[in-house]
Image (cartoon, rainbow, N blue to C red; front, side, top):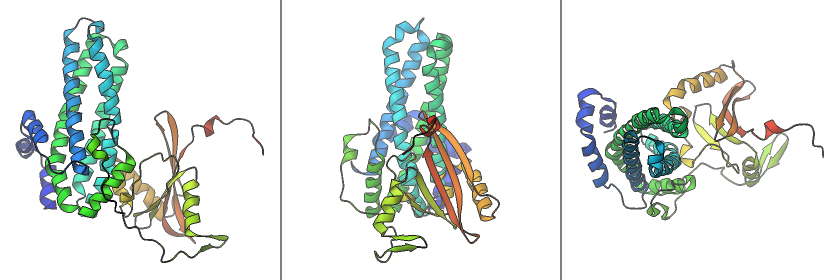
Length: 354
């Protein structure tokens, strides 16, 4: 079944045309087909699909109105609607984050690996189109009415097309597969982790219903005796609290490239859920970044690299990301990822003594 699923998603040409058909047909199927009851993670995702498609339609309507006016003053109400849609599209990031950090790892545990990778790739394509939309809206006064109308139409069309295609694939291929592969108890865990990550501002209230809880089983020590190090000892509770108190996010990947641990710092920068435990680190990154991950890991394993550093701007904050090989007596044990918000640190000047 998995091989057939991958074949359907990967094939191009006439097969894809036959699957997707006309846009109106896809839209109708998306609206009519319900796979799970309210409160179920799949139901929530599908309801969000409907709402996002509505926003895409509204965006297209606004673009058509802008093309017909002589000045922006004539579309003041539409511009307010456009700002409203943009804010909701920004908030929709939660939708994709929940899929990437919870649903996809569970599918991978059941052997469904390639379809989530393709869906993640499309998520990034959607993100790029949304970024273009945000720029067009932000610069609408400076670029002039004609260019604004043209660019808004182009980006609205692109966004509507990719959302229709992407949501159709998820609703009709990925989600039915997930419902067959993932167990009932696992769905309870998925729901809990969805709750932890949070929802979109437009997510239906039914998504916030709390089902009976179940916990993901993560291997623990056989007992609670002290953990003894060369320079001291801790109880398990103390070690966990200490790691969660660190002013950085850390994730440990073992020598087999499997994610084994992440701390739960007070203000986590990037989403992490328990579903990531046991996942190959390569599957935790979009496909276009995997080759870089492989280069870093190979350098660590071959003792040719001792650190890899990156820094990015995220929501107005400067984020510093470092990777370190964990070794003992020259033997590679794994990789430590350390992520830190250094925005305020960069502002420090002079001294502040005890």
